[in-house]
Structures are given as structure tokens and as C-alpha cells.
Amino acid sequence: MNKRIVYQGEKATVKYEGPLVHENKGDEIWLGVEWDQADRGRHNGTVQGYTYFKTTDGANSGSLLKKEKVSFGNKLWEALFLKYFKEIPPQLLQEMEVQEQVKDEFLQEHSDLANHQDEKSKVITLINQKQVKIEFDDTAFFETMKKRKKMVEFYGFDEIYKKLNNLETLQELSLESQNVSTMGPFGFVGSIFKNIKILGLENNLFHSWHQIFVLVSQLPTLKELSISSNKLSKLETFGQQQFQNQIFTQTQDYMIYDYEQGKHLEIPVDGCGKHVEILVLIGMQLTWQDISLIIPAFPMVQQLLLCRNILVDYENLQYRNTDLQALKVLNLEQTDLSQFECIQKSFGHLPNLDRLILNKNNLKDLPLVTDFKALKHLALDHNHFAQAQFLNKIGNLQLNSLSIKHNPLVDKFGKLYVRQRAIAEVSSVQIINGSEITKFERKDSEIFYLKSSFEEYFLLKNVKHYYYDYDDFINYAKQNHPKVIELIKKYGNPYEIDPTVKGVYTQAKQQVQQPQYCTIKIIDHVGKLKDKPTPKKLMGNTGLQPVKMMISKLVNIPIKQIALSIQVTEEAEVVQMEGKDMTLNDFGVQDNSLIHVNVIPE
Image (cartoon, rainbow, N blue to C red; front, side, top):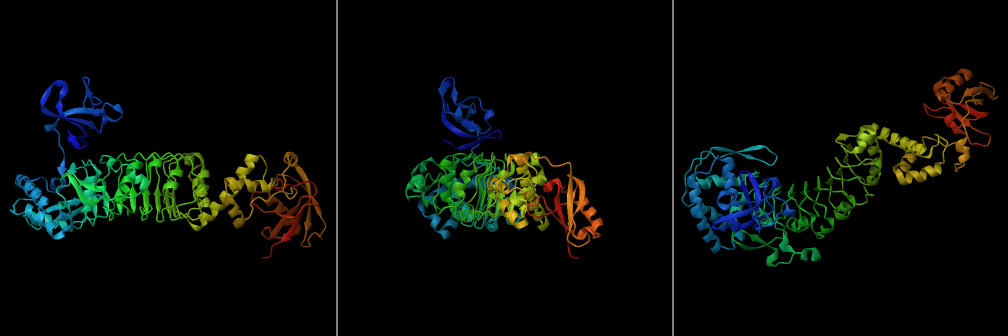
């Protein structure tokens, strides 16, 4: 049961094998299958009242097929020849059928073959003992996992042994969608691919994780393995003991099971793939419980790609303190993630996690992120962030790059606003959405964010610039824009408060209307007006620049050398008047306010 088959180009899982009971056909063997493509099915495993099997969730995804009409797939070596050598010659097929019996006998006599490298080559010798001569292409092209073509030359050799031995130099191999279902006798694959480093076996017919364990245990040079889009049975035999003890005990339940021999090997699952650094498990319907049972086999994995799986059962995710310590890249794209807290709790303590990819999930906000000390790259594209507040939750991370494309807040606030705010709030970041940040862009973004935080507060409190409770603003900033406190220390307060407000903003002050006209007194500290206050009647909305132009004519000093300050009342402190677009009202001007004129040295 649970083996994988292909029929008319569609894949399915075997759920039943036996006679067709409801039609009393006991002389024929039929298979009850559940299709990967559910709409291909005709029933839920029950036909005319007789239940052969049960489909997932009772869906009508099942069918009954004659066993003789389905294909159970290819051995790995068969897929290799079919893909790269056009066809398997009849002579080779016949030879292999005869030799399967020889190999089985040989393996029974040499049960410790896996531990003796010199004896392992005897399998190849047996396979090629008759030196069958066949016609292959003189050259073959092997597709790497990066979709490049790598040519392997055979220089006219036509003996199987020489051709197979030439594959020993191969380091990258892709057998995607070749209906590979079995590995062949233990040790055979390892004898052919002695130097393989990158292996792609996506979308094939493997049915058990133990087949994968058998494979990696005989390929000690393998660094990168992709088995995406394979539908493997769950490792139910592991039970709950691992979750309780978080260790593997050396019993048969935890040894690799070899389906070719029908027995456990003397090789533990624990650490069988410890040499694998990159593990790609995309689109395999995995849960966190599945991952928890798989991790011990690959304890030193550095890149773990789990995209398009159903990873919502975070309560089932557990692993030993010794596992995943080398993990640098974790890709959880499109895994139905909605709560970042689960990620932080499960992976935040890992010492080497450098890159975290959470694209195409359901994240709407983030908690305060305090862990992930080694994290340098964070990707949050295609989520549901509608407000920018989540950016201040990651301000303590030492990120080098941040990607937040295709979130609702981009449509709401615009790309420029989101970029500037991200630059300002995550001070360590050097790349936003793939684009590097310049020195001047960082300064402009920080000043923009500083001012916009003030303006957000003014709008919320319905107060005017320079006429607000600064202490109240600081409390607001601590809760909503903590980075602003640091930026005020760096750049100063862009909106100095009305000096008549002594730290407490009153409703009465809020309701005071700015005068349409006011009489101000100009005090000249450079001696041009003989230190006598000169009264001028001006509108309250007169800009600072026109005021400077008027005073420039009075004191006969260039505008660029004039520095102004204001004393709104006799009791108030003197405040510098700065700001290109500021008006007298912005400074809280009143009748008889004093404007002091000073000269900036050239």
C-alpha cells in the first residue's frame, strides 16, 4: 500500500490491491488509487456499497484500475538512460533482468556491503560481467538543478562498465519528472555516483522517506538534494517517543528500512544525511510534525526550503538542541503562516540563521522581534501588511537587506513613503526591495520620518505646529515611533514648541486663534536701528523669508547673513526662527512680540 503509480500521465497513490469484489471478479488484480488530481476520481473508495479504501476527507478522488495497466515507475538507473540516452536497449533490459537475481543472491551473501567500499564495486562487476556491447550516443547532456546543460563525453566507449564508470566524475544531476520509484539494490547508486554533489529528483514516484534515507546514506559526497513535489507517506512508525525524549534510540524502529530487501539496515536514520547542506522540500504537503521527524536525519542542514507546504501545526514542531545549529537559510514561502510569534519561538534562538523568507503568507503585523541575533536578510513580500507600524517591531534587528514588496501599505501610502520609513526605522539595512541605499538617501529618509511622525501626532491631537505638548508627543513616539527618540537626538526637534507652553498643553491654549494681523517689534542687535524697537504691522501668515527680506532692507544686511529669533511675550524665552516654509503664526506670534536680529559672520 501507499506505493505511487502513474496512469495515462497522471499520478496516484495505491490504497487497495485485490479482486473486484462488487463484480465478483476474483481472478483479476485491481488497484484502488487516490489521484493527485482529485477531479480525476469517480468515487471516495466505496463502489456499490462495498468499501475498498477511504479517500482523504471522503472526496471523490478515487478510482479502480487494473494492475496490469498502470506503471509503477522506473528504477533510478533506468530513468537515467531513458532521459539522457534516448532509450534503454533491449539487450540491456534483458541483461538487467537476469542480473537482478544474481545481485539479490550477492547482497544476501554480503549483508555488510555498505560498510566495505572495495566490495561495493563487485555489484558493478556482476552487472557487467558479460561486457554487453550496445550503441549509445557518443555524448549525453545532463541537466543540472540550475537548468544548465552539462555535457558528458564517452569517447566512443560502448561497454556498459566503462560508460557507468564515466558517470563517477559527474557532480550535478537532475532527474526531474522521470517517474523514478526505486533506487535499486543498496550500494548500487553509490557505486555509480561516487562524486555526486547536487541531485534533483523532483516530481517522481517515491513513496517513503526511508527511500530517501537509503539514498543519502550511500552518497557521502551529496551536498544538495531536492525531492520537491514527491508525495511521501508519513513517518508514523517513529511515534511520540521522539517528541518526548528528542533523541533517537538505536532500535529497529529507528533504523533505515530498505524496501528493496524488505528489511531494516544496520544504519540509523539519525544523522544518515548529515553531509547534506541544502535540502529542498517544496510542495510535498508536509506538516511541522513531519518536519520534526525528518530533521534528525539531516542535523547539519544549512539551507532548508519548505515552500508550499501546510505548516500551521506549530505546536508539533520540536527538535533537539543539537539539530539545525548550522541552519543559515529558512524559506517558508506560501506556508499559510499568519502568526510571526510561532517563527520567533521556534527558530529565533538559532545561532547561524542568516536569511528568513516569509513571502506569500498571511502576516498582517509583527510582534516586537528581539531574537534572531544572526539574521541579515528578511523577506516579507506578498503578505497583508496594511500599516507601516510593523517596521518599528524589527528596528532592533541587524538586517542588511529587507524586502516588503506587494503589500497593501504600498498601495495605500506609496512606494516612496514605505521605502523612506523602512530606511529610517531599520537603521542597519543597506538594501530595500533589492535596491541599495545611498548615504544621502538615509539622511533624507530619517529627516522625513522624523517630521512625518510629528505631523501624524499633530493631526491626531488636532493641534498646530509649534503649539503642542512636547512631553505628550514623546510618550506617543515611544509607543508608536520609538526610532524618533533617537532621531531627535541626532537631528534635533524640527518643530520647537511654543515657549509660552511650559510643558502642559491646555485646551484654552488650543482654542486661541492666531491673529490675522499683528504688530511686531524688531530689535536690531547690529546697531543699524540704534537698538530701538521698530514696530511693524504684519499678517500672521507672513512667511519667514519675506520677513527676512523686509529686515534686510531695514538694516542693510544680506539675507543670508540674517539670523532671527522671537520672544512671543516678555516672560517667554527667546527661540530661533528657522524653517523655509514657516510663517509667523507657526511661531505663535502675538501683538507686541519681539523679533531679534543678529548677523551670521561670513
